[in-house]
Length: 138
Image 1 (cartoon, rainbow, N blue to C red):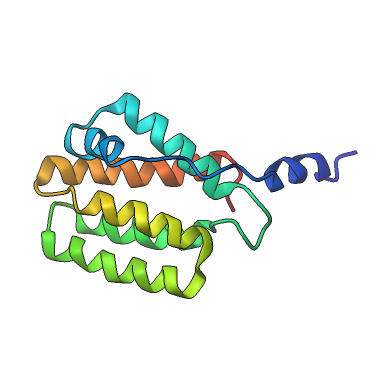
Image 2: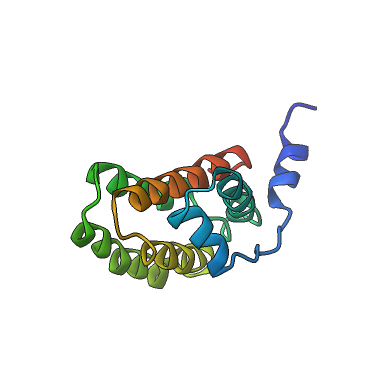
């Protein structure tokens, strides 16, 4: 019919929260494993894009964080640590999946301690945003 209802229905299907372990984050952030990066971020992106409109994580909610990360350019522990309370504020304000994203990103930030792990962290967050969009995040 072209009214988008079937696509909309697919977007509203709830996906269960993925189990992301400390070891998963260690392999992605500290070791830079691309295969694990794609596995973890694909599951996260799909989950964050799923559910009813009010439950989904919006693109603007995660783009704001991505923009701050990209503006850092290179590893700066002080600026990186400032992201933690900003994410906590957003999580407290919006709850739901924003809070879940905050927990994962906070754990990932704690694993960043040099330029290489910062690059891996940037790739991790960029991939979450990309998969979120791919799975219908708006």
